[in-house]
View 1 (cartoon, rainbow, N blue to C red):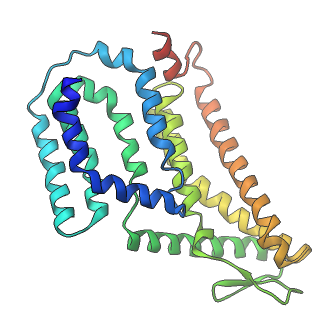
View 2: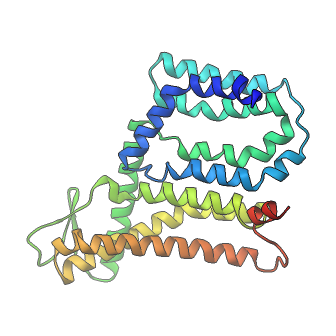
View 3: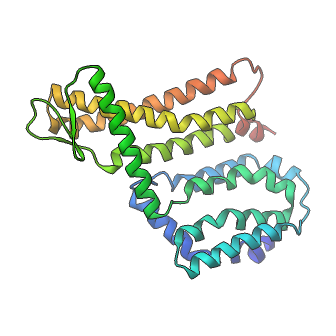
Length: 283
């Protein structure tokens, strides 16, 4: 408790406005609606792995000043330039440096996957977010139209909308339809699956994490194709309402199902391996 009050609480207070900014971006619900779940995941993992963590010797390491110094430098730069995203990005080196400084390198290594959650929780700058969302939308529309052309659906693009034969109203495609939200959420899910469940195999972790981006993009393209089919077979209003909800849910079922299937295939042939969280809870 003394260590917390003397070191970690002042750091948390120093980042007070950054925490507020991160929370506001989460609550906007556009791309980071999964954010509020990450602190809960972090606490759960730390509690389940506390035995492994405390088994490492708590040896303060002065080299932690390098990381902490870098983090605070970025923090001050972000505050001076009023760049909230830079201040938020500085949280990772600041927290990692303080952990190394107070309890040592070995305990820091044990906590690195949890600290890594900050990278998934920290919103990107607004202009970068908008650019990435736009580019993803372009890729998704082009991919979906290519598939629609192969199956002779007869749809074509008109500006930011899709013209469906036989429909007076066009099917709108907003930036959110580009799949950035699902990509960020699926990347977070893949990270948690890779580092907090299953074996600690480097190959398994790398495959799962690298799979999330093309998986999210590919399934989103198929989702748009499904909306085009619904718009042609029923109407645009159905596709933009009930059909949109159905396709979103279906996309998530497919994403999670494929991710779990790949994980199961990677774990096959590794007898006797239990989930990492379960191992630590039993220890």
